[in-house]
Length: 73
Image (tube, rainbow, N blue to C red; front, side, top):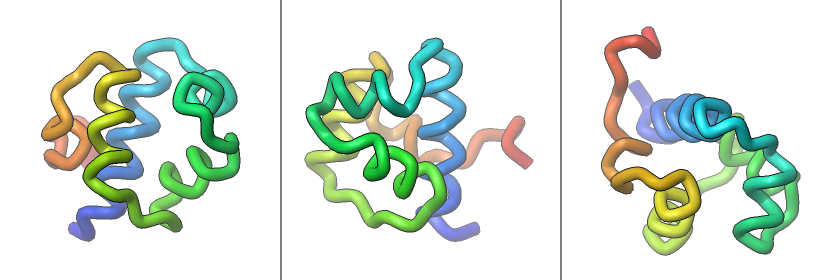
């Protein structure tokens, strides 16, 4: 599977698991909500720095955002 799709699914999963809206995550990261939306739709490539910042805000290890989850199939 495309790593961008895996990342997008994981980002949405962990964001929702934390009870955050796209707008809330975007505000915490000081980015536009549309940027979070594009990442969750696999339309936006992310830098490693963005990956790290997302992981920090979601309180998880960065690898969890790019590892395919068994429950995501």
